[in-house]
Length: 445
Image (cartoon, rainbow, N blue to C red):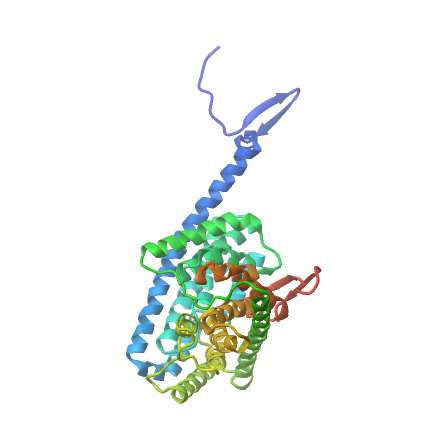
């Protein structure tokens, strides 16, 4: 009998009587080994996405910082608001993205594994930079969610992964971008999971989300991006009186968050109704913003232009020094007019600014220090507009430290419960009722 080489085959043949069955090598591995290999594969994907999105997030951070410093050094740049708005509209039209839905598109992409266009990333990057250069009132964290999601979503679709895993990778991109830009890795990971479905968190995505978030955070730190943190003074001792004060503040912030969302949505509808041409809308909105900026403080005193981090700093760390009693209303109006006109950016930091300035003013009226009132307002308002209580509690810890965390948690819980079903993102799915433990499956209002 001749001996020859037996060709290797990846399948194994098992003879069972007259039948021959084939089994793949993976089928011969014990379930624990398969689970570990799956864990490693997803971990590698998460870290790679964290690195890629983290680099873009860092570049975005420095881009916003550079143009903000440039505008502060040359305040006359706000006179270019109509030009900036028009350029953003034309840019999106040229790329076939004039009907882009912003962060709402991200939520749909995660929930339904819908493909996102990769061009979303450079578009939101450039348009947000333009908005900040000319003095629009907008944030950057919402834009970061679009940045990270578009990149990771495209990677998922190119890899051809299953829809469940594709959604997981999109979440990783959101977490990495938020973390790299804002320096709050715990908040970023949970927020990316919590914001899509209110009342449900996909625990299977916890490890990838945290890995991506922490990778983006560490990379940003190595590249010189400092984490965001504030020093709070006047923390009250945990007592019955403090609980009552915090509950009142939580309720007030719930009302503020409802007002913020209603004004944001209503302004957008009014713009669209009376100025249906997006180009005219952007130019008109730019002129309105110039007029309001000049009326408020002139060219040299642009307190309410930009994201609003300066207002949070003044309210919390500055213990309310220089904060105007009506400042939160002005910031709401500036932000609604900016984003409603077609400028691009986020709503999260403006929400912080509104909550901080409101809490700084309202806090002393109920016996709280301006600093602690501002800190409570920051996270309670954030919870009210995003419907994300767990993320908000983590945000309180990362922004303000562990001191007074039970009081922060209480204010956040009250704001969540009393803010109803309003929210910044109309595609956010609210799965469970805030009033009773029943499933309702409705969109945010």
